[in-house]
Image (tube, rainbow, N blue to C red; front, side, top):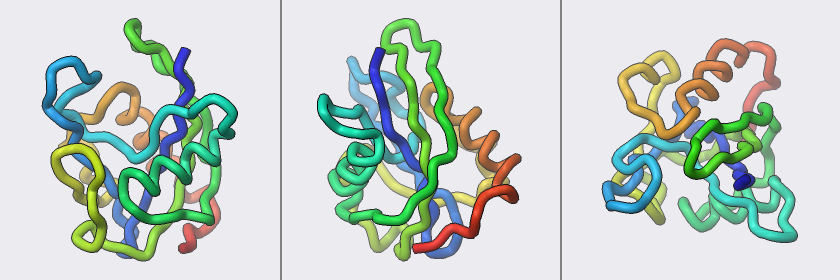
Length: 140
């Protein structure tokens, strides 16, 4: 089983930051929209992996975030446990440099149905959208 740290990252306008995965043969979920984060390396906590991955993927450091929950993927080829966090950053998509993938954008949560998300991310985003009123105000 793979262990993954991922974040529902919100830009300075309160929109969800997402990126379009590469369309390369051999990668999982090519040409699907994704959240930022990645595989937890040996010896890392999920939080350390989250901070490292966002630094690698967007070139920014997050220090304030909350834990949303944990999810297990039923992907037969690569089953994984996702540690899901949420955070707000003081940037818009055009101010960020994408380190991987085809392109970066931000969306209003109510527009999430217009995007084809990788793996179980649509379920995670849906759960967050339905419960966001129970979370503390996102701060930068």
